[in-house]
Length: 159
Image (cartoon, rainbow, N blue to C red; front, side, top):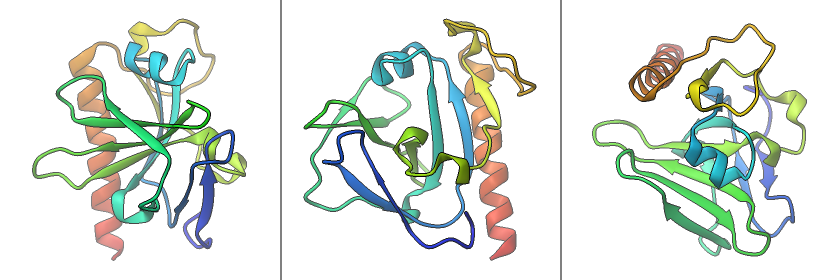
């Protein structure tokens, strides 16, 4: 995906469209109860980008909601179909991050494989894979941040 042109993503009904470009930072599977409720699914499969890699038009039909403070994750659903469209994570002294539900990519086979499970203690089904599993709030948050920081530092070193 790193050398690919911009990719047009969309919600399931196609009313919410946005563009992503460049290589994702990480792909994760989150089993927290907020992700389960937001995605109406047993877990969230999210591909994460820096905010500068995602272009959501100003006239987007996305309704944003904050489910919990902190962290300050703005979770957006398409106002037409009510399905997850895009999410923004904004933390002090940290680059803004965008979570894109992996299902919103036209070709999911072009995405990197998931790197980790977080909040695995809240899972509603077991997974048969070799990915690291983090359980509980602080271990999951710390692991997620480690993966993000590592990806951001790697990107900076290449620049």
